[in-house]
Image (cartoon, rainbow over the protein chains, first blue to last red):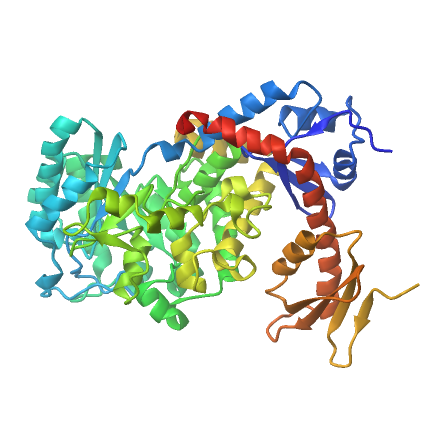
Length: 484
Length: 105
């Protein structure tokens, strides 16, 4: 007979393995229970004195006390988790030029030739871009220069930085600049300028010499690696050790050599690495059969290299795997973690937007990548023709965001891992032809679920060493690795 | 006892589901989850029975009977999700309303 000795609070569940069920609530607190206890829980037969009952009560998955204070507490936690929505819009990516001197196998932006100056942003467009950026209500503004390679139109980069700093004298926002570059054109003069304006640098390093050169040759030489390493040293000399971060992209060339990629990051004294799979845009989509791979292969390699990175950390070599760190922060802390490609509602336009060289504004970097392939589905408008309200408060943006809440998407709505995941309508559209997407066949869903589940498995082990590594990553504090 | 799983001459499998035990939403949600593995057709067979037919997809490595077995277990979970949601649905709505109440004002 059913007895209502306690009330169930909102939760989701997944069968974690043959014997256990994973349960998480609206704010991402979680636990594992045996199949037997799960049956007892849902049939209101759990013994209130049992360890399982007390655990579920502490995680606010059930309650046997007055409901109002519990709702208050959950609402506060929920608001905290979603507080990335407070800053609308933080990340403003600007494309000063589409020209690039690289010849990357997987170029996702369909770069243009070095002499194609018609793909450069003009001063008039740049001025209008800055004006619009500062209409954003967010108290934090991050301007990120994307390409092509921004150093090929550095005059416009300088113009935007100085114009933004000028406008910000009155706006008084927290202003940050990042320049994404292959670094090959970096000079002492440019670095002195960047130092004066506190600009961070993001570059790409795809592995040791042979792998990097294979993935990211220059148009005039295949040996970009030596140039890159020299330039990283130069940047550090001017801007400090932590001024340069690097990203890597996994193609078929380095998929089976991810450990070597990790070793290279450690050798070059980087503190973080983001093991990224190929995104289905630009040349990466066009040439998928030459440089792509099955998503299951990536997942297996990711797990293997994550274990390796953890092992390196346990050996005292601090290196954060950024995707794992993001997910661990969502799983193990109450804090908000906006990540434009993976949040709910999606970050498109509300967390990040991109201003192309011609003044066209897109909801995400991937959206302008799609546009470069001829599909302008995610075009918000143009800086010369539209006001801020028309760009960011349009019916199109409203519709996009309301259709990218995991809480209402098929399969995501009931997914036990929902609190840690996010929606990506642009990716859904590119991969599957519509913004909602089809979860059973979605590669993104497969990848995210598999990695979240793998991390939960590692957390469940409750291994002292692994726990220390995870907390050192979450807090970005190498000293938490402690003695092993 | 009446068979609940029928195999037709083309090797397709029809699963007979009692509507008294399972709601439409649970049947749809479960069917959606398996659309990567099989072509699924949902047809009412009588007032109390819904037939769910499975036709194997060419690239699926799993046997159809294995897919149907997994479907049956997943169907139970989907129905359970609906049952527990009935209990906490109002609480969830209240929680979200409270969380964003400052914005609504």
